[in-house]
Length: 250
Image (cartoon, rainbow, N blue to C red; front, top):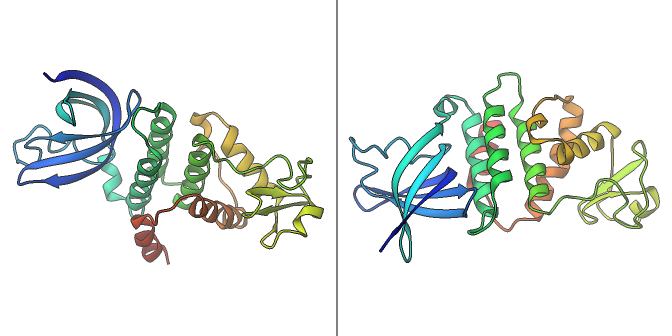
């Protein structure tokens, strides 16, 4: 006999199953990343048609079977339908969902990642917020939440504190290096005090303050140079929406 459970979550992805059904991936506070079947969700009169799409945050009531979950009811808290009208913001959003889906695991506590997704999608809706900066912030904070934060306070080589105005950074060292250790790293490059301060801020600030600042184009370029490659080197998947973003933003 199936058990009825209620979880708070966000729809990460949805795919058609059969003629009328959908299979959705959820990131939930209570059970981590799970999948559920929404029977009849693709029928025109189905109450599940609009609520089983990406970016829907809400409370999901599910029947828990032996091998799968089946959707019973959804109470929507926020749908973010307005994001679909923003280009290229919608594709940044899809990439963020992909990254969250990549790291999500069943049975884990995903409260912080859910909160991060929520404040990040809201940031994409801000007209004065550069989506390139939003991406840098989301990526670095995601790596932090996953326990994969780069070393930003002491030298990754010798462990000594590094001066903010004379610091190097390296993918090989997974973070910052002092002047002496930088000479032994093949990929070390000097990072500005402003860029280093920004990264330290991103990994430590309360979630609600993540998207309350702006940076210069020069600092943004530094953040992109390190953070994008850092994520690429610490994941083993090519995220399909990145290809779309590269075409749109080139």
